[in-house]
Length: 190
Image (cartoon, rainbow, N blue to C red; front, side, top):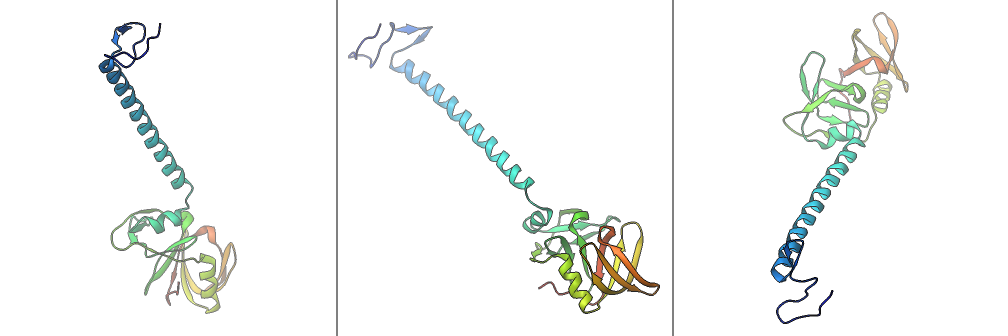
């Protein structure tokens, strides 16, 4: 049975005790405090789990070129185990620029945290770079995965291949077979 406000306690219900828990002001305060702390801890744990899920979801939706461009210093791991500091990240490649510029297709790149400066991101695709070099008839070295290297003048660049003038004649090289492309005359990436 319910009672109205009394002078000694705010509300009293069903006597002084219920299931062994005092229902006076102190008992209710302890019970509510305990429930509130448990509820707040559950909300904090759920918020943390949701934040972790969101971060994982966002990371899983990013491309390798985006991750490489935003991860700070990055090294490219070559098949020999050698590490090269990545200096530039394009839409579909990573590269080392300078007197011995090299581009590596992003699909086959193996990257790890590096030291030094973070790479510069450039909004250009490897095909655009190759076409610019072909227009200038630039000299390149193309290292193929497990098939050696070929040197010559780049004649043309198609969506899935390049045409290379070599000492043994013209070669058509599928881009899927390319490990890296080195530019003897350097390359301008903007």
